[in-house]
Amino acid sequence: MQKQVSKVRVRFAPSPTGGLHLGGVRTVLYNYLFAKKHHGDFIVRIEDTDQTRFVEGAEQYIFDCLRWCGLEPNESPLHGGSFGPYRQSERKSTYLQYALQLIEAGHAYYAFDTPTELEEMRNRFKTDENPSPQYDASIRMKMKNSLTLSPDDVKKMLSEKVPYVIRIKIPQNETISFNDMIHQEVSFDSNVVDDKVLLKADGMPTYHLAVVVDDYLMKISHAFRGEEWLSSAPVHILLWKYLFGLDHMPQWAHLPLILGPAGKLSKRDGAKFGFPVYAMNWIDPRNNEFTEGFKEKGFLPEAFVNLLAILGWNNGTEQELFSLEELIDQFSLERVHKSGAKFDYEKAQWFNHEWIKKSSDDHLLPIVKNLLTNKNISDINDSFLKKLIGLVKERCTLIEDFYSQTVYFFKKPDYVELEAIQPKWTMDKSTFFNRFIEKLDGIEDWSFQSIENEFKQLSAEMLIKPGELQLPFRIMLVGGKFGPAVFEIANLIGKAETKHRINATLMKLNN
Image (cartoon, rainbow, N blue to C red; front, side):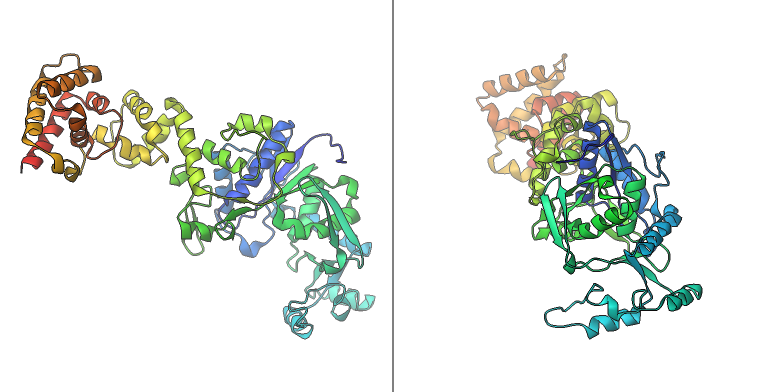
């Protein structure tokens, strides 16, 4: 039975250490959908306690990604709120009192072991059965800590500012259980859990202490995170029990992994198999390593959010396309899968294609205009471009496709695929197009119907099937075997340009 909460408050707590993986965005999405469905708050809290891994620009990048996806938080370092600060590094003084409270109650202890002594411990207690010894109940009484030292020695070392960490004291021979909203009852043997560091030598908390303290102080009602964090659950449960009581603990849901071609999806999979795994392009300032993003690859945010939603969830029907509003209305944790969901890039492209088709021309206009402007196409008339978008969007899978599908409306093709015309080219066809140019001069009502009528009337007079002429005509206008209805193309590029492109291709064919 789940506890009742007065208000739903969920949080996404990323570390500013790099790009935002699509698994992280899915965690954001499920948090966001749950909060909005229950009229609650979605909070973003930056977990930057590990200063050695901090990457300049990563925090801003995270917020840029969420903004692009349309998943804006109610509270965050950027949005403010009543439970700040929302960066853990700015809450440093808060954590010490809770760590000392644990020591006072006998649930934690000071550990003065140096890095060298810890390495010696791992070598000394290493066996075939235990190749990686942990600092746990079986070893802690053989180490230099406040459990093995006299109170006077501990007091003296503290006064002399000897470096120390604070570790949780994991009890022996206990079963630690909790009810997960996805996995139901989950249990752990305390004997296989090590005494995790709670407070580091620099005074910063580790994730284990900070996440519990912050979730309590920020009144978090539900905590959703990847199932890779399940192994940390027993430590967190004990901290909740010791500090605040289990009645105050949020309801947890550990989300299934997103799988790639060879296990958990990673950015290496993207580099190897040629698809993005980050929401937006990311360049790591530490080594200039580039990782491609879905946005720059040409995905609409609506498609990206949609495909992430069904990577591990469905609404119980065959429906696959969902707006954000529909997702909010229909989302439930009961429909989240327990097993991992495999990412399929071809399916991801299908989502984008479908969203491009269903998006209004007005919605696509600024996106496509920006694309063309960046490709050095200037003096774009919005009304004209809207017509083009409506004409070609069903042929576009990625936003980038709008360039190849519209560029020939703005300038003549750089390359004409003559090899597709030449094998079946005849003098009769050459004569047809020379006469067709003359016919075009006589069209006063320049419309695709008029162009098509003249084309078909002339082909009938010359006893040539229209189908044998339309492919050469298309290639003359756009350079290849693609594009919308050829008479629409002629109509939109205009009479003079249509005649010019026919003439230019005839000259090349005759030569």
